[in-house]
Image (cartoon, rainbow, N blue to C red):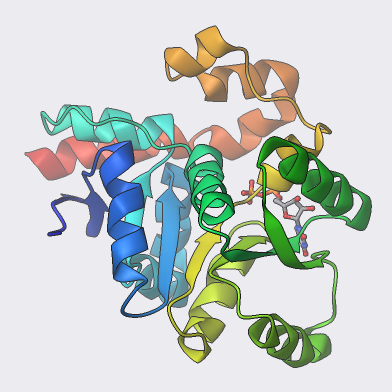
Length: 241
Ligand code: UDP
């Protein structure tokens, strides 16, 4: 399966449909370990300031459009693209692993959140085999032992919820020590799966306005989103010309 990409401010964003993206990463992981990154404008902004992070974005095996801003940028380039929310992408991979009796590892979030998320995921996905679960609050010194333990469990899927950019850096650093493993950085997904954080109502999600819902619920996010989004779109428009 060939990648078909659009360049947004120097980054190759994949234009797969949701189903194709899952299929692509499952296929590729039969040959090597893979890193999937779900991209939003804040990550592109971070890449501008941080060369290491920029390289990680460029070397991802799959860079999928998560945020509303990326979808809008593609629209500016005349491309109509299905959004692939990271949490739903990870959910589909969990489903795939459960159905095929493949082991899954989870790393990240607070201990209680993680445990509740594991329990809820098992209730929802018959046959799900979680072979490793570790909260995301550990010292750098413990990282080596943690990675060795995950390796010893041979997971097919490793979901890393340490926030951006920690999760991307972690995956980049260790993925090549694993054979045929699918790594995905999933941000706040464990918080949602545990039930601690609610996703936006369906109507907001269908309209691609999850960001607006979050903004209403958590107005302090405004400082983070603004001026990132308008500035990002401005750069996209300039770049088009
Ligand atoms: N997190 C973690 N360890 C850390 C920092 C964050 O496990 O050192 C977890 C946090 O508990 C949350 C997740 O990372 O479950 C994502 O956090 P956030 O929503 O801030 O992520 P982002 O918006 O960067 O995707």
